[in-house]
Length: 287
Image (cartoon, rainbow, N blue to C red):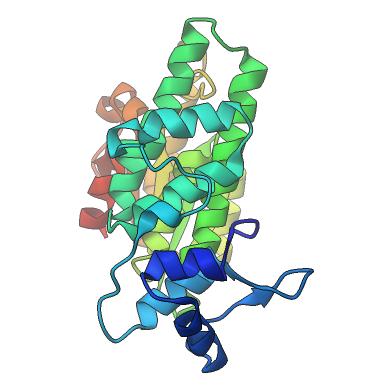
């Protein structure tokens, strides 16, 4: 989250210590920081998380000091806040809300199921009621996508991964937010992930499988207006594509996982040989 920083005073409040302790931690190399234009220390969310993870004892934090978040916000209000800030193009505030949830100990899948996905539902509802335009809905999703990428960069660990996964949307499914969230969950479980993103053709999928040894493939079928792979005009093609992917996976001994709310539209048309999921919290049980 490159643009979100705390200064020394804010960090001292966060860790419930005085400024001299913060300076001592930085000078000893325990706590990383960078310098502002004026030469003052500034601490990124990644710096903070690295320090917390490397601490030998449990660190108690005053999370109300995290930038750009309203102290009065209750967790139940976070989906609304994420939706509002996405429509206001305030990605930095979304960054802070997600980071705050993570630092409060809420696991990744719960953040995605109960906060990010619900915020997307709120945006969709506004579109359905014609309170916002399609262009505004696209902009809002882009802001959330940006924040998810920033969040991934903050928590991503450069560790050796023995398992490899391919994540993708089918042709005619444009948004890749769900695929990005699946990638983050898999990487946190020691997977090396190839994210093919949205609108992936069967030809491209075949080429990817031929070039890489994947252990698992994750396909997500969204039910919002921006995804059309399971609408009537595209449904037969999507079912045919998934059946072909399923056969390729069986031949290549790849675990195929198909998820998302639109899965129920095609699940009866696909033979066995895959696992299904609806919520992000179900993914860890599949791996």
